Image (cartoon, rainbow, N blue to C red; front, side, top):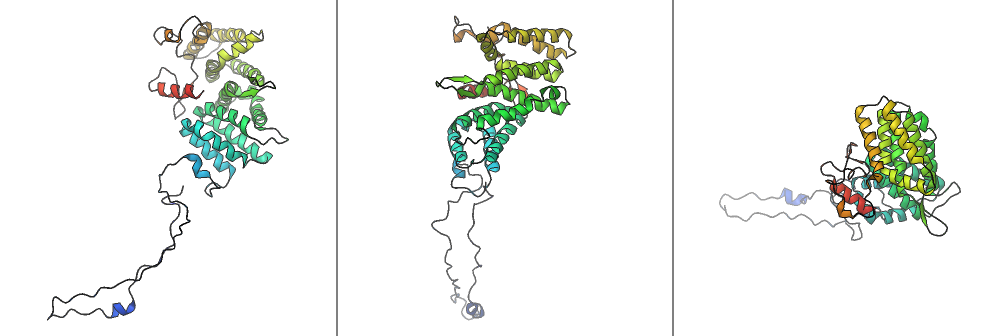
Length: 351
């Protein structure tokens, strides 16, 4: 929305008295101090405003987001600008996802009509999800919704297929990225955590209507963990801990169903890192806490226990099963930190 009002009426000429009235302003007669003054009457200008003009909204007025994009609003003439503005809006107001995602998808269905447009949409969401730390979860939810509600399905692949292809380009350079410079590793870590969120949120509907997770992501996460542990620098190990806290219980359940022992192999590798790797003391403590978390079934309360029995006071793993959250500055914090309960409640109610 532009500053001030959306539109202003055409500028009119200033009111001006007729020349005759200016030339003939009478002088006050000294003998008649009470003489009645002359009144100059300006002509009435006709308004050029139309009754069909769009409504005016003052600067700062906040209406429902989707209403501002109806009927091809000229302020956002390109797909890129429209999508980016919506992504920024979700980043600032994640609670608006449920109320505005349907209208967003409907708008995209009328706009995204080519392979290039769909590729551009995937790239915009991917960049937002991997460059804004606290958007990876919301980005994964958005990807899941669009994968089921976008109608375009060109020969190059539908939304989900193009998204996974985009992720594959980062996956294929995992070994180089894990041993790269600090900037490269930081970008790689963002990708790893986003892929973890995709694994938890991206739903695949089978031919019989059953909903499953993408097995290809399960395999990918296993290899990403290998890349992180093969380069045991502090930030790589911290990323591995975050990923396992986020997805560990789900991954282990899936592997157990297939008779695999991948999680046990990962835990063994963590123990070897703690013994041999030249990482900081704090990181080693994080790894040991993760091993402890897994030994307690990822902090999940046993079926014989009730929900009320699990509290921060009687369960040492109460907070450890939560995913990693970030402040607006990208600083990670846990559920035990102040002012976190509101964020936790919002996130779990959205699942």
